Image (cartoon, rainbow, N blue to C red; front, side, top):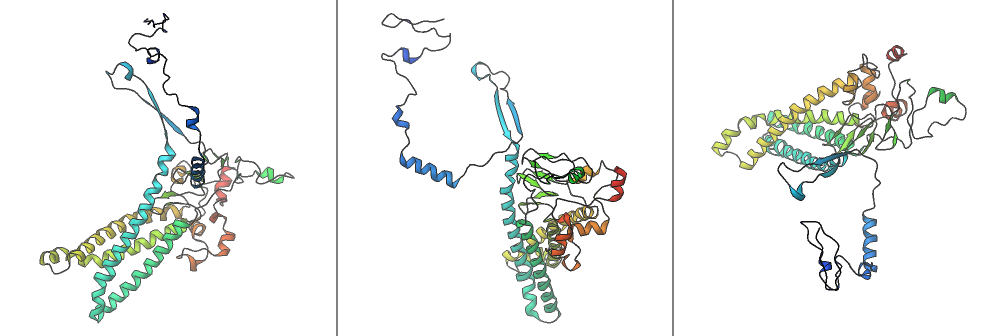
Length: 389
């Protein structure tokens, strides 16, 4: 231990080897570092006004418990001294997932850019000159332009319906009610915050720890939207929204019309793509137009092939009344309890009015009579329910 003697004869407190005594004991009078006068930290009226403005512009958000992953970072082998320490870090997983919303907004701009490039390549560059030629070529070009605009209108209509339509939110303090509770006198249907067994006889003691609310059947928590979604299928970055009970039909129509539009664009641009290299070599066309035709053809072909796979997959899910998430739950069951037959499964999503099947709309009668469109109650196959009993 090391002690130091001051001029007055007093000794300083002992210090450990390898350390330096405090400078405060060397100076007379001692200097207290990191000490500020009290009046220096007093808030002024201008700072209070700025603080109040910031609080109103950026109000504090309510925090709910989310899973935290603790990470322990160890130093590299061979390090010694004061650097040999452990550092603990905590990463919020759901905050990382919520960053996908920014990617979704970029996807909207990408969709707009692809539509603009396709419109210029098909209508202006390819069909425009054909309309001026007259004869059969003019009639065919006019028909292509009409079909192109009809599909584009239906595509954009379905797309914006998916983007702005709420996929389905769980009511506050929701819980399912036992059949025994319905028979009891004075029982309340929606009091309490826990979710008990559902009316279909299955054990559904589901409770979302993130939303602090009950979870209806077929409901799942979205890590990107930070909430529970009724009959959630998946979160689509292309529409910056979840696909759930209330907008699943609009999503399927968006896939259908986008596939038809991209397929037609690919066929229309195919002759121009084949002649691309010859025209580029002979300089018979504008380089900008050739580049637009080449780019639009490649993009439309890629989207048409990928959307074909999505359509086949969702057609299979629709025929069995299953969501993308429930595919894994369905593997463990002999028969899927929500499978009512292909016709009824189709009507659970598109409604019973055939005139509105290809439009992103629902009739008032279907909304009132089909509970599955609300996402809280779903009919169950009677045969599967009898086997469960």
